[in-house]
Amino acid sequence: MDDVDWEPLRAAATAAMGRAYAPYSNFPVGAAALLDDGRIVSGCNIENASLGVTLCAECTMVGALRMGGAGAPARIRAFYCVDGAGAVLMPCGRCRQLLYEFRAPGMVLMTGRGVRTMEQVLPDAFGPEDLGRHA
Image (tube, rainbow, N blue to C red; front, side):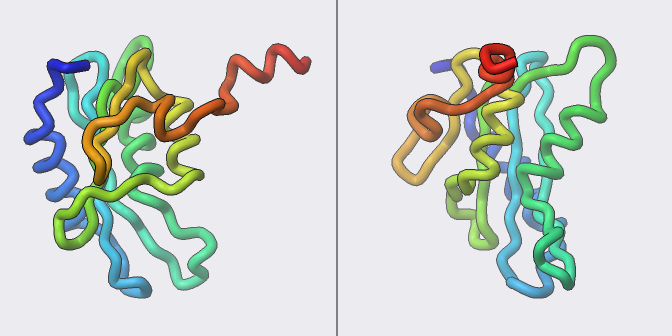
């Protein structure tokens, strides 16, 4: 994945962050992904007064991924997430699991320490392939 152009992903994540609904935490987040079909999808966090049903930016982004294509679903090749100041954010554990579910082979993420593979940020992940082994 050395061919990823990170600037369009950063710009898409920043634009999405600008649409966040974060009146309780005042912590807007934007996320963007480059898909294996070449499209970029994005999402923002959407808070709720009950807080427990708040949607992370990664959740709304994956919703856009699933809703945006016909035929075989696209997969995530590269991912970028930003906070309200535009700084790179590492997805939480729950969101790493969500990204893992929809990853393309060799998926990479921009992190505060530079580009990392999905395997580096979620080693020994549990995925759909594990369900069949326990059926």
